Image 1 (cartoon, rainbow, N blue to C red):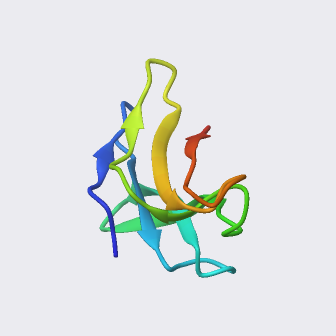
Image 2 (spheres, one colour):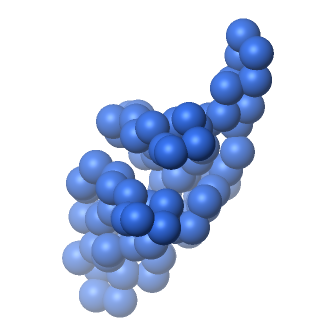
Amino acid sequence: MVDKTLLSRSSSACTRHRCDGANTAETVYELTPAGSTWTYKSLYVFSGNKDGLYSFSNLVFDKQGNLYGTTNRGGTNGYGVVFKVKP
């Protein structure tokens, strides 16, 4: 499942994909325009453990360009996490 896509100040698209990545937990990634195609850059691959599992909310940016979101599983007690990713 691909989340809603955010457009950054630098015209890159940031999104995440549930059940993707090495651990099938989730991947946050950036897409940057490169002519008529897009360049894919993985920003963070979740382990599915203490760092979270399965996206829950949409991603949001802060003024510095960091991405924030939540998961509905994983974390210390298994009830999800709030995460921050620096692109």
